[in-house]
Image (cartoon, helix red, strand yellow):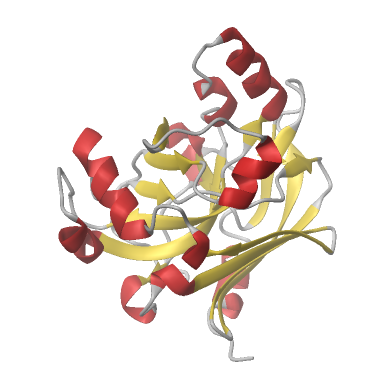
Length: 248
């Protein structure tokens, strides 16, 4: 198996450690700083059929978009912290897209030129809090947008990835497979979701888009050891080993 990127990712670990958004900065897969500001995180829900089925979710023809604030960003490498006082914190592993140029009411033909690169992220979710808010018919931003709710990896430049819609990704927890994803199975592909998002809110340089999670969401606990990988065919682009700690 041809591998590129993992060695560089391991070198990031001493630099990006268990921090909040103040310690986060966009990095490329060689550990170099990407000179883009930290921005909001725009997410799509219900973008893989198997996840819709496991959650027994109600769906609609319109896309489900939501936003995490910049304070949700934290480094994925080495270690990240989760809250322990609000019930279960679930993993949702997703392909992340870094925006390099502004997109506003853009067409599908325009959006891919604005992509800087691709990475992996965890859309951490306070599942018990979210379930209660859903029952009350209230918005569930606090279940998705809390501080540290978006651990984010280093970015592979877009020019390295010829077919982003063919990427595969995985999450192992304590050596056991938990999530396996294939971008070709997205309900809305990357270009379509970027275009649709840009009709509602401008995507600015430095913003990050999370593209949805497949089946396999489940609780994380402090002490868990995680391995996340991003592949293009047989080529490993990212291989990140990290662990979970408890927020103070």
